[in-house]
Length: 268
Image (cartoon, rainbow, N blue to C red; front, side, top):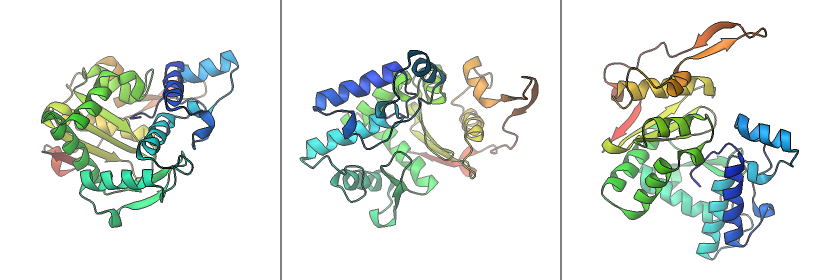
């Protein structure tokens, strides 16, 4: 439910198990079929010849959780993805609570997966993550369950060699992060309750990983000498059609000595 998963067999199996627990099936998901995002997941689909299903969609866990919320609230499951549905209204109220943005000022649109999507200022997004971390540190049950689930199940957040999973694993669960569409990325440094939000203006993902890694280094959450798996995300080689390295994608601009003044960072 906290994932943009890679559509690997383990991810699909858990989503299907969740649906079974709810007494529902793939057809109840409002998200469409999607090729797996991870190379391992895509290779499995290709080599096994199985049909790409809605459960392969990277947002299928989130959609299944929405169905569960509809059942819990006693609401109809049909149309759960629409902005006017009680499920989405409940989610909107939670977003307002954690970000401090009134519901009337939250932008509402339709996400790529078909569900409602909520637009808030970048600083408020970072603030929500910081508040989540602080609440978890205080021992509040639901925030603690969410952060523990993410930090202890890194593979389920993204998948094999995907950034969020690698960051959580290489930080030993000290940092949790979640990718979004169009260059959005948020993260939480758990032991200091620092929330971070990054947005690449043109929506290109290749810039957001180097930016987030650099920011985490500036904040002292990651070492200058990165583990090899994380270093690959900070500086990625560009290759031509002959597989020759012709350049690198890297972060050239510095955030400044005080990263809080030059990025969306919030601490509580």
